[in-house]
Structure formats: C-alpha cells, structure tokens
Amino acid sequence: MTHSSPRRLDGRIAAVTGAARGIGRAVAERLARDGAHVACLDVSATRTQQAVDEMRAAGLEVSAHVVDIANRAAVRDTFARLEAERGGVGILVNNAAWIRYQPAAEIDEETLDRMLAVGVKAMVWTMQAAMAGLQRSGHGAVVNICSTAALRATADSIAYCAVKGAVAGLTRAAAVDFGRLGVRVNAVAPAFVPTAAALANFSGEAVAKRTDSTPLGRLARPEEIAGAVAFLVSDDASFVNGELLTADGGRSNSAL
Image (cartoon, rainbow, N blue to C red; front, side):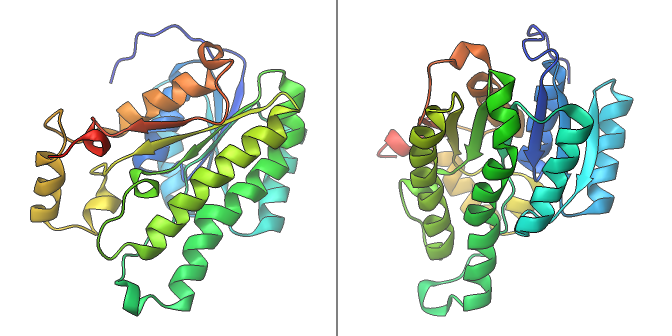
C-alpha cells in the first residue's frame, strides 16, 4: 500500500503492542511510514519477526520485541532496553488484547482474569514503564485502542465490554495525571474490524449484520484505524487530550 502523507513523525520513537497482526500491524506500519522508528511488541516470536521482516523489506524502520505485556516485570525490562538503545519512546500505542466471548452466565475466572490482565492492567504497566521517555521527548503521546463496546453492549460480550469500558475510563484518568507531565493520552474506539483474529469469533451472518447497520455501508479496514491513531500521536493533535475518538462509520450514532 502506498502512502503519500508527509513524514510528520521523522526522528520519533514509537512502541506498539500487539503489533504482529491486525490493527496493531497496521498501526506499526503507518507510524513507520510517517517516519517513526517503531518497536513492535507482541507475545508471539514467530509472528513478530515475520511482521518486522516484511516491514523492513518495504523500507520501514522497525524492530521486534517479544514480550507478554501482562507481565509487569517483562514490560519494565522491554522499555528499559528501549531506553538504553533508543533513548526511550515518545509515542506509545496500546493495542494488544486477549479476547474470548462467553455468555454472562458462563464467564469463567480464567478468561476474565486474562482479558483484564492484557486489556487493562497491561496498559497501566506500559504507560508507567514508558513515562520517562514520553515526558523527556517533549511530544509524548499515548493512544489506547478501545472499542465501541465501551459505549454499547452486544450479546455474549460481558467481559469484552467490561474491559473496553475500563479502557475508556483509564484513558480519561491518565490524561489528567499524565497531562500534567506534558504527555497526552487518548483512545480510538473502532467498531468491528474484520481482521483474521476477529473473524474467527463471528459468523458470516453476524459480520453481515454489522455491515448492514453501518451508515457507510462497509466495515473499517485496519489501515483506517491506524490513520486515526496517526492523527492523535501527531502534532496536529497537540491540544487533544483525554479524547475517545470513535471510528465506526457512524454505527454508534445510527438507529439502523
């Protein structure tokens, strides 16, 4: 895919979690095309290296970092290495998630704990670990990938809605605390994006219903969510802090 926007992130260091595929991969690629060096964090060594190799082959400046972001000590170690090797990060995108859909009456403790650990607690760990570099950079920006599930519920999604609702609240609170340090914190809330991982959880009928209920008449591409992230981490959004940017084609505002 070609990309013609100016390299407005030249010289900046970004970290993207869950960067090996889906929205995270699209975000990593977009930020790199905009000029940033992107540290790609993911739990899968194979997927991460493959993604990084492909992006490097396209001329992008990226690096691979295998880490389970639910492990606070491992997160600290990863960002300590980025401090030592790159002088810290000025951009952090918290995209990683672990998702399993279950009816409310059947949700089990193991599932809920893992979803909260990856989808909420890990965002706190990464922001804490990256904060010194974010503050020092003079342009520190964090974007958390949320979801329209923070705004409206769907069936069999009690844990997912709880996690994304927490992300929305966490983002607003972090924007207050870290804003005082010169670091902006925002979130992007997509609706359903048909990545390979997402499609594994939904039937064709469910995907069709989501498409039909979107005023734009289609679902988002991962690159379109990446575009919203790219705006929020750029200087064009230098006074945007604590915002939940909904990117759902108008679905959450429609009675369709």
